[in-house]
Length: 309
Image (cartoon, rainbow, N blue to C red; front, side):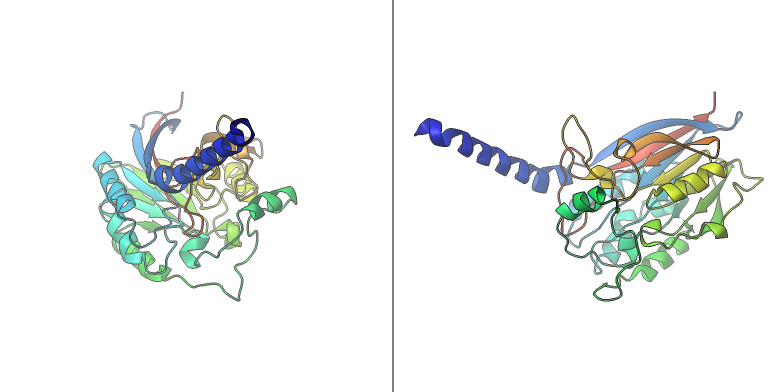
């Protein structure tokens, strides 16, 4: 009798333990990733960039708010927020409270689909089915019926008032306390086809000490365009690092057409005979309907930009 039921019971207990860990422990195990990227022109002192993404704030997430507030203690030279700050239309005040200390620093931002629209309850298995069928996430416009409008305008206004540069299909510049001027080019979210590369085509602006590109979802069409236009560094989010990963294997999906090998962290992208560095943040939150992570803890990244060899 013991042999007959021992293995099923053990597997059931193991499954329950994994589910509990993925639901309760890992989503609250916030990490800071540190990366060095040799992209600056010779003669420019190193810069530290804090990359924050996919906060997906839900009202009441106090631990996440405190952790985000604590990141200001790193004193980066500037902050880049690559979107999906919301997963609850009531959470805008809590997003602004959590990011408040960071908003005292120079910064730039783009929005993601969940900033504009509330998430919908979906079967997580659909992400695997969509990948198998050659589709990638929503891969289209938000549905006209059933889409919940998030109050993103108030968040935008607060970011702008703090001096953060909005980069939705436009360019901008940041003047740092160190005296350097950073050129920035950004796109609205390709995941819901709001990107308009024709509005920013032409490569980095002249006169800036360094230029980088910013987008929420790292779709290949966008990465190809930025790379061919000679941007040395592209920052993105959206993927959640795969969110539910297999230990010693990695991510199963990216929720876009980026390959799973580059689902998070620093990699490179080649297009048009050129190469750019790509950094994809695994983000520090998750959709309110799938608040789980496994083998992929929530994170922000402090990138130290150094001179090219």
